[in-house]
Amino acid sequence: MKFIHRLGYYLGGFALGLLLLLFFLNGKDASCDYGPNARTVKNINSKPLFYADKASTFISTHTLDSLTITNLIKFGNVDFSQSKTKIDSCKVYHIENIYKERNMTLKVKNCDSIATLLDIKYTNI
Image (cartoon, rainbow, N blue to C red; front, side):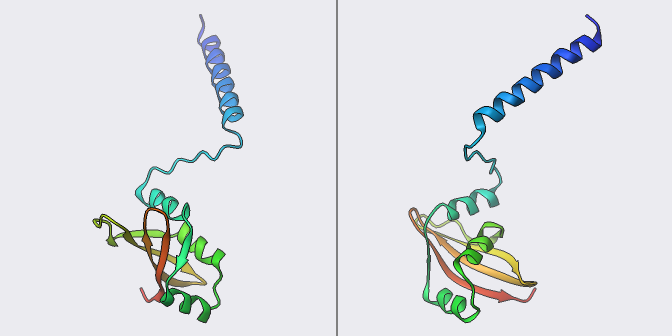
């Protein structure tokens, strides 16, 4: 069999496989979150988020809304060197992000069923 025929069969099967995958995975919430940062942020976002008093004061002072806070967590970078991940009960994560060209740090306590925003502040890095 000539190379061009083998290539044609290969590309045809590959295209058919892609179409089947698109058909079966269409509409499903499939994601590929394999990195530690992505898994941590996905775990935090899958739970209801509560605000501590200190965080609520900062949010009301700087007129932030819950969607902004959710996006800061969702698109932020977890600083594992400052986070307390060795705790058995509830881990505390430091998430860094930029909002309106200013660096922000969020401290989130991640428990089994809820996540609590403990502190949010602007940082000068």
